[in-house]
Length: 287
Image (tube, rainbow, N blue to C red; front, side, top):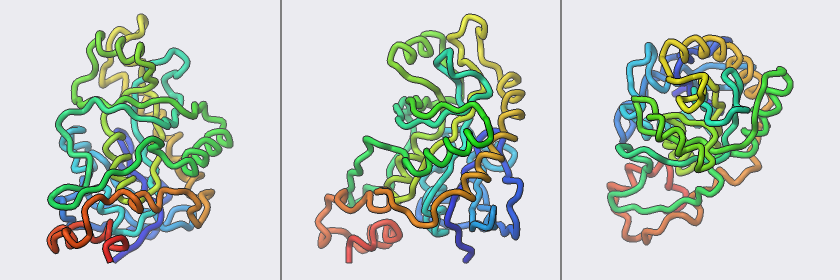
């Protein structure tokens, strides 16, 4: 099976990765069902990379229909150690302008219908999630934006809403009083599951609009978002390629041992079925 070191998740508007060479389509079965689409596995800047369109090519899946567990498990199965997630967001701050990039370092969960863990069914683990993104990947993204002279804001909180409808005005104003910075519909589940899979993760958030709180932008429309997305996607391609080339070959962060002290279930009580299902994630800890 084809292998990769770096995973790229393409969000709204990003359904392929220019520059990806020697591409193979890989469709992977997982214990959690089918991923959003085939993984496009190849080389980018001479690094083995796997690309996945989060919503499926052609944008077929709503945020709540995405099988986040299958997507992240598939990356793990391919050998991916780092994930760069590209995501369209609305801004909740005047200074975070449409066309800017934001690198959130915190998340706030406002979803209601999604499973955000691989665990359960007789095997329990509680990961530390106080620092939900990988500092190495965030720094590489920030440096890439600086090198390319693309406006970028490092830090801030991404509030993840259920969707698919955009916020009401009351919700948007409330999130601002809470100190939230950008709003989107997808990154929270990816970050949690990547942590459980011991994969480094960071989000490159592309600001497309001011949500609906801004007096000069009374409502959010798909037309407006798509117009800004088209311009932002070209920048995201450049940033991702630069990051893939510059990331260190070896990991020195703590992401690769996130489960070391997280598993609560007594090893002798873990069922054979649970071991088979989650062996890819926990095998090294249940020997």
